Amino acid sequence: MSEDSYARLRFANIRQLPGTGLFADEVGAIAPDVQAVSIDLDDGGNIDLTGIENLPLLSWLIVHHCDGILSYGGSGNGVMALTRLLMPYAQGVTEQLVASPHLQDIEIEGGTLDLLKHMPETVREVELRRVKSASDPAAWDRLSQLDRVAIYQSGTIEVAAPADGWPEFVNFIVIGSLKGIVQASEVCPFQHLYFEGVRLFDPGASFWDLQAKCVTVGYSTKPPKWLVEAWPQRPEDWAERFSIASHRLLPGSEEPYFDEL
Image 1: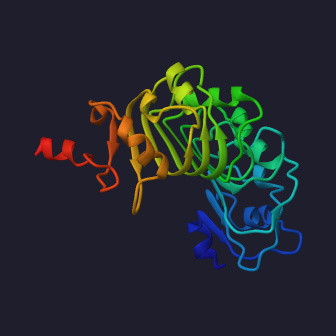
Image 2: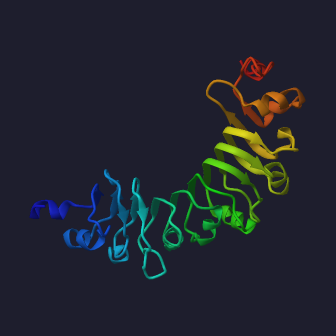
């Protein structure tokens, strides 16, 4: 890097790492005031996050493709300036970074919902992919502090109602099986709830018993089988709380929209 470019560097995009996986000391020597680090290894390899706590202005840490993330021996208090974290789950490492005291936005792939217990109160948005159900239902209580939570591409998710209310927006997208959500909504009603690609909806419960200000079901070509089967049992006033695109498999689904016109 030239001396001129040194002063302008705020974002480091890393595509290759040495065999050790280390990068923080080198980045810090070149630009100690770097604010964002994105790691996307073209040829794979491990990442060692040792030293990132010594980058005082690091607010974004984004990790995409890698073979693994090595154990992180940081201070135990996360990274002081970190506000956004996007990474694949790495046991022990993710929990430590999620505990960063000023974190606001989290995107994690893998792990379990238990990692929510490590969030500081500053977090407002969470996206989780390929996540497993929490071993401790109390982990759901941490959702109350959020504005939005989205769970994607996961197997079975057992839902529990947070003690102090749901975030304003809750999304479940591409989920194998969603269990306990109707009961959870009866304990604590949702505000805006969105489903798309949910294969199995709460066995033994009625979709129409969901308690929410607004429930939206999205789909690309046709509605899910469980919705088609539940459709004949819909209440007369279903359109007051449920937003469902019209489809020939849902006879009468177009009526609310024609009524509005």
